[in-house]
Image (cartoon, rainbow, N blue to C red; front, side, top):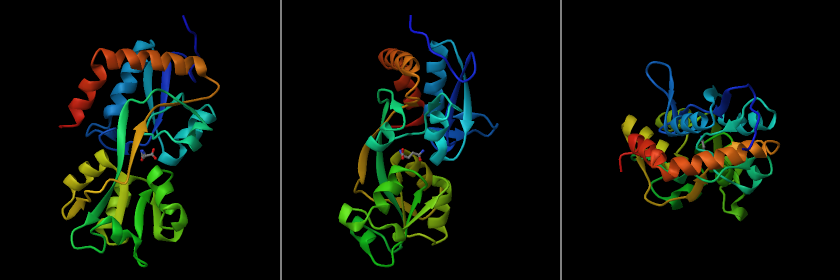
Length: 235
Ligand code: GLN
């Protein structure tokens, strides 16, 4: 039997940004809900732990794991080579697609329009959307000067509604929810990037990583993960 330690005995602290529906958000009664929250709750239960959601800016979820404040980072978190230098990733449990939200009648109506000299792109701070878009033009980005990083997806979408940016690059499932909740927005057909979501764990806690992968595999095999996804995403 593998032994692992957590920040606090009997608890599993999950660093997340609860403004990323349907993966993590705050319910009307103030509780945390969403696909990640429910999968993490199920993993915690398999390990005999109680989940504690630690809500913070997305840009700090990996740091929280690195400095031992949280046990896991679970935030629709995309696996990237850079992030792998800072945390270990579990096996992937979902696919994310970066998409572009535009305003009806606005300056961006296609991916090509994003190259315009006056175009401003809204993103979320620290996300892969920000990283891709702010890269220099030679590296297939649009240049930092064309990108604004907001604290979360909801504020980036508000900036689009207010005309402060011409489009928002964000993950597909939150995009669908933001577009459904606001008039006059739509999602471009062209996908920007396809990514894997996984759970970030401290590089010093390989026993916890192994335990999480074992629990996750069982929850995938017995259909729990799919039933959680189906509850939040109507195909
Ligand atoms: N999947 C994106 C990333 O990891 C965005 C995640 C988020 O905003 N919560 O960068």
